Image 1 (spheres, one colour):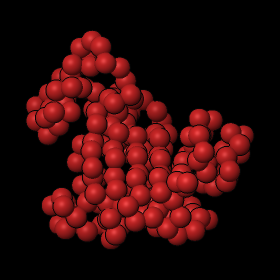
Image 2 (cartoon, one colour):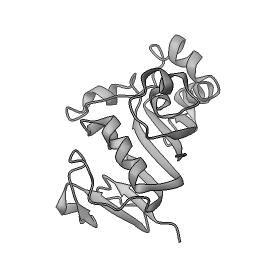
Image 3 (tube, one colour):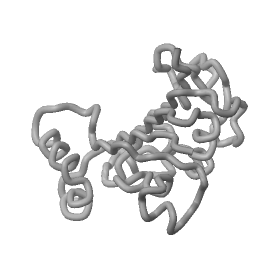
Image 4 (cartoon, one colour):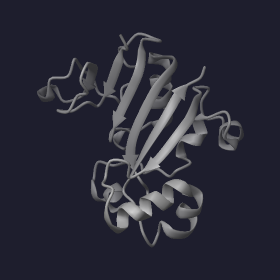
Length: 177
C-alpha cells in the first residue's frame, strides 16, 4: 500500500494520507509548523506527497523542497498546487509569501537549465507536468484560456497572462535522486 503524506492538510486531508498541519484544531496526524525544518518524519518513507495551497505560505521554498525530497522515496509522486503569479488570489491573501510561474519548479529539475545554473539544492525532481487551472472548471472563456495556456505555457505566460490571467498551477514532480 502506498504511503501518502499530506503536508498542510487542513480540514480536507486526503483519504488514507498521513496529515501534517500546524493547526491542531483540524486534527492532523502530526501537529507541526512546516516552517520548522527538519520535519519530524523519517527519510524515504512516502510514495506520494501533496502540498495543496501550502507552499506559498512557507518562508523557505528551497528548504521545504529539500524536506519533501528527504521524506519521499525515490520515484515518489509529488503534487503541488500553488497560486499562479498573475492571479489576484496570489496577492489577495496576506499570508501568501510566494507566487509561482510555469517554470518555478525548473530550479529542482536537472533537465532544466535553471537547475545547473543556480543549483539552489541537490534535491532533484523531474517536472512531469505543470497544469494551469486544472481544478477550476472546463467551461467558458477562462477554460478556453487555460486550454491554450496548457498547450503553450511559455507563450501564454510571456504574451497573454497579463491580459487573461489564470489562477492556479498544479505541478506534478517525480523524485529522481
